[in-house]
Image (tube, rainbow, N blue to C red; front, side):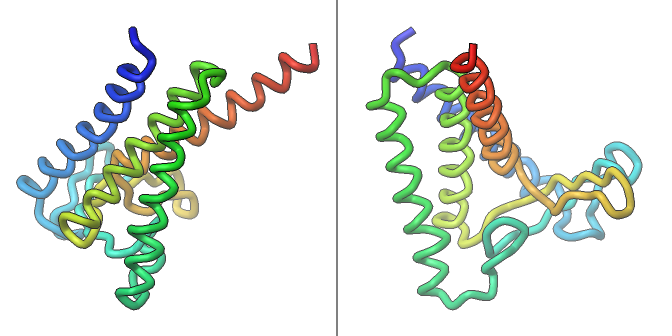
Length: 164
């Protein structure tokens, strides 16, 4: 498969899955904890919230100009640069390339929400113990996190290869 087509399809796949899940949540759930759905008791729940900030709501109380800069303009510039980087850097190993596509897809999906709705739809909540639990997140956040873990693994793998 053509490399640029592979990049495009993987990014679009990540955006599509995120946006489809958000449409399902917005059209079938009740917002807030009163509409929560227990998937696995209280360990894995769906709770629909709208996040006006960034990760875990940080920055939701910023003034509109700072929000525009830090939650829209800056992420868009960074995503644009990363797209340019992965298209131009042909030496990237496959795991790193896939990781960057996940990060870009998740990033674009959340930026799209901020542009289209002024906020980001979140709905997954995981509790491992009373003290170990996530904030409420979405598929785009999962894509970005998965991509970051994959990049970390790719970096560890390449360091091991260089040591041999």
